Length: 639
Ligand code: GTP
Ligand code: SPV
Ligand code: MN
Image (tube, rainbow, N blue to C red; front, side, top):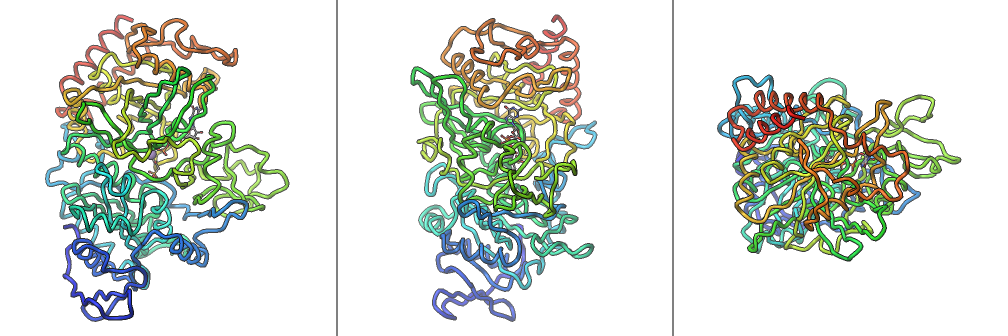
């Protein structure tokens, strides 16, 4: 148990009906909302410990109801945390503290007994980039420095939530404790949250992941703005896989505070998946039906802000194709008794990148997000609407624009109106192309896995792995331009294996071994690498992307069906001459450039991967992956 402390005395039925007293050492604390009797003894115990540590004024046990949302929206309006967007139905705008706008990977830690359980330990790692380890002692000190009394005078919310449909055998339950009503409302969109989850806990094995979050109260320095309390200087996000426990302090933003998402579904999730023999991945899941009416499901791992949401709900430009969305960010995948790899989306909403979303690029998202949505750090218009870079300018006729910082905006300022990592938080069920099986507790069968990233040079539009081990090597070698989703400087090409670099819950070498072992567990899907982001010498995208990515999906679909439409290349299988359907593409798309494999580039790339494996993975690199690298080097040398 991370949270050590005095066990509280509880008195059962004092106070008005529906009121339960947590009797602290010298004062009584009432549950202001909800009924503590609905909590299991283990949850009560956890809440007690958090109360004792954080010393809130009152406790609110979330029931997940619309009435509760009304209450919290009213409160946030009063505090200035959200503004109503009157142009739409039940939509809100939150503007964060400008120092709290993205995930903070450098302040994210995992605690295990030994360091190599969390990260590869190598002789020559010039600081490790595959996660941060923290000792138990340092973790306890970090908590002790930040949490005692951090909720004084404020409300502690208890959010029971399910990752995956409530009560489904593949789902897992969490309890998030937070002092942020914004987090409560966001968790009610992103997860299945509320009273029904407590019923499942009462009836089931009672297991849950403990998630403690506080926006924090700065000890010194500039007082954080009252409308968005946070403590950026002391922000820390801690995970203890052995206890299924998460502790997050100082940030209210996205993956830092909505603990069901990256912390639980990916970091803790990947450690559970390793133990239980399945995969927890940073992947979208989509269903695609071809003109003959045959349907397959595909999962795809692209790094943060590299196109998952867009691909997951794309509108194909190829006639006769249909895409349906199961999820846009996370996949839990497990072989069934027949050896078929089945995936569920553990989430209930989309926390999607706003900039770049428009009727032209992602009409399905545009049809999803203008009801029951919380927008964060987008710009607003004087008619009660939203605006961001890349949205149709027609939105701007006869209105003034307020930027994400709350200042009047003009294009001439040269500054973006919306923060580049501004997002919409919207219910998945509102997506007009949500897949009929998206809540199927058996999951959907996965026929292909795509890896990809932002590669401005050298990497072709699509290529296919020759076999499973080659595919695992391709995932391990993924690189991509940094984006605004975390604190890195954009445009630097970073290694982001499996799009999981920020989200591994355990040693990447062991993760690779786990992936390799999947081949023994069932029928493994085909693996592909895609790149929508190759640029011309003039710096223009060579590929139109978005709906035209259906042309690549069409080739993948045909490969899954066994069509002989490929040719071998030193890096993998490419579409054979004429195999990519380009009918109706604008004439200026230069396929030759899109598929070119420059020898120097690939020699450099192989060298770079080798240095990365040496420095970052060292002796933890499984032999089959090292062999794949040796083979690549050999083939590239004779290009
Ligand atoms: P996370 O939610 O951070 O994990 O990101 P994501 O992978 O879901 O990224 P998303 O789909 O939101 O895309 C991020 C940005 O990439 C947006 O600005 C998109 O407009 C842009 N984008 C997505 N697909 C394409 C594409 O095919 N071509 C180009 N040029 N840009 C794209
Ligand atoms: C990502 O960065 O990959 C996201 C957004 O999906 S956040 O939830 O903030 O991590
Ligand atoms: Mn993501």
